[in-house]
Image (cartoon, rainbow, N blue to C red; front, side, top):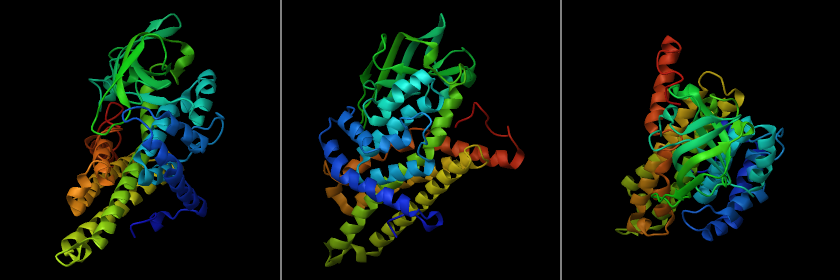
Length: 398
């Protein structure tokens, strides 16, 4: 009961086969590549392997008209990878997050230039939304995009950008109309080697590739605009809506991995003359962890299924927010409980639980904090009760 999908969302034989193949690929190919990477730097060999084995192509088809992965498939990929390697999972997710706006709204020239390279893992993408003074409040972006002939000059700072400053292309959001909040933001595809673009790496609790970008008059031609001028906020939110349930899947994968370690330890470890599993405090804590993990999995699968049926349907936004909120909060609790069961050995550098303990914290912040998810859910509750506009709106959290 601690393994596999919920029966309310029974997987097809093809989906189950995909999960098994991805986990095997991660164990045999990706984990060794992770070990050879440098902490805090983009692992290009890992990204290339994800491309070589077709996983990136599922998210970003090299053929612009080809079918991309469904939200459900994205969740299955992320959960399966997270159970074996959080680094491999994160490399896949970041490539999808940075590349999706290019696939969804890029010009023919931009799509032709980047999609084949991103799908093959030969180029690395990044999603550049956050700024020092605009994190959860994405409508408050200050990085300027000033008209220059038929193009724009970009000036300002981005912060906490995954894969920065090493990415080959940034989906970057900038202000084209001052004072217009979310109605004045435009998305651009910016090459990583553009003149005037610089940056530096940042060090966080978990050693991922993440950094700060500084733009000093970076020129962006009209063909680099993703979608329409002043409508980039909608593209950013649509991208986050698509990926939000799969953040929950990432969390579920981490929770499942931690739970399995704790169960195995409790079954084999003896204390006071009997297995830990026979102590009710331990057994009940693990039972609670297993129940919460399964509940989180079901919320994730439901949110993904709703999105695939109709991304614009009533209830899709709330379902995605519930899935991310509950799954990420659950993963934090399950990993913490697993550490408690194993004791000091779980805190030794290099232990899986020590690794998960550092990894599990960030998903409660990025792509919408837990507090933002609660605001979204509350807004949707009131909207369903008293109609649109009762709580939030375009300027509200997404």
